[in-house]
Length: 198
Image 1 (cartoon, rainbow, N blue to C red):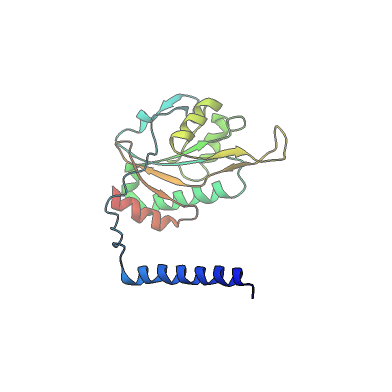
Image 2 (cartoon, rainbow, N blue to C red):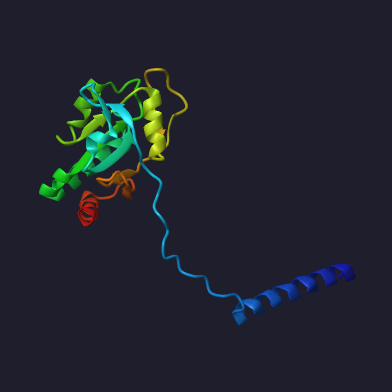
C-alpha cells in the first residue's frame, strides 16, 4: 500500500473514533423537547361566488366551524372520494353537524359555473356549499389556505385535468386554523376529531 494512502486511511479511522467517543461520553447536552410548535398560518379573508351566483365572503361563515376543500368537479377520483368522506363525517356528527359548514371551493372556474357547482355538491350532501369565482379570486383564496393547484400537462381548453392538493381544512368560528385531514381520512375519524374541537 502506498504510504500516502496508508496515512490518509489512518487519519480517517482516528477521526471517526474520536467522534464516536464524544457521542458515547455524552458531551452534547440532550435536545430539549418542543413544548410549543406554534399555529399554522392558514386561512384568511376571501371573496368568492356561491352556487347561486351571489358574492360571498368568509364573513358568511362567522361563528361556524368551516370544513373547506379545494378541488374541481371534473376531478376523476380525489374530489369525489373526499366529498363522500365529508358527507359521512357530517352524518356521523348528527346534530353537531349544524355547527359545521362544509365548503367545496372550485379551482376550475372556467368550467365550474355556479349552476354546475350547485348540481354537483348536492350529490354528496344537502349542506355542502359550492364556491367559485374569477381566476384571481380563486387564486387568492387558495393562497390563503396554502392549497396548490395547476393545470396538468396535456389535454385541451375543454378537456383537461388539474393537479391539486387534497387536504381538508377545519377552521374555527374565529377564522383560525384548527386541524387538517389528509386524503382518505375515514369519515368517522374525521367526525371524532371535529367533535373534540367543537
